Image 1 (cartoon, rainbow, N blue to C red):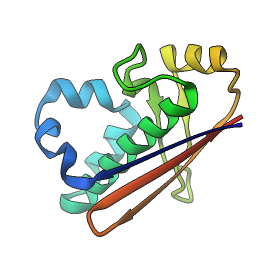
Image 2 (image 1 turned 90 degrees about the vertical axis):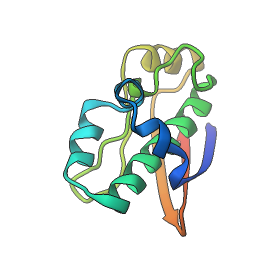
Image 3 (image 1 turned 180 degrees about the horizontal axis):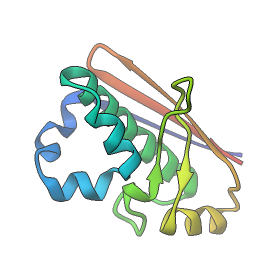
Length: 122
C-alpha cells in the first residue's frame, strides 16, 4: 500500500487558472466540464481540490508534479453520489504499472480556504 497527501490554499491556483495553457495542462476534460457548471467560490474550491488530489495521487505513483506525468493524466471525476474517483490515463497509467499500483482512491476536504487530499494506492 502507498499513501500520498497534499494541502493547498484555494487561492493558490487563481493566477495560474487565468492562463488557458495551465488549465488544459492541469485538468482533464471531465473535470473542466464539471467546473463549468459551478460558479465563484465553489468552482475555485472544486478545481483546487482536484489539483490537490492529483498531487496526492502522483505521490502514490512515486512521481512528482512536472516529472513525466501531466496532471491531466490523473482525472478525478465525481461519482454519481459526489465522491471523487481516480482515473489514470497515458503516462499516469504507466507510472502506476511501474510502481506496482493497480487501484487508487482519493478523499478531498475543504475548510476555511484550504483544501486537503489523501490518496491511497495498492
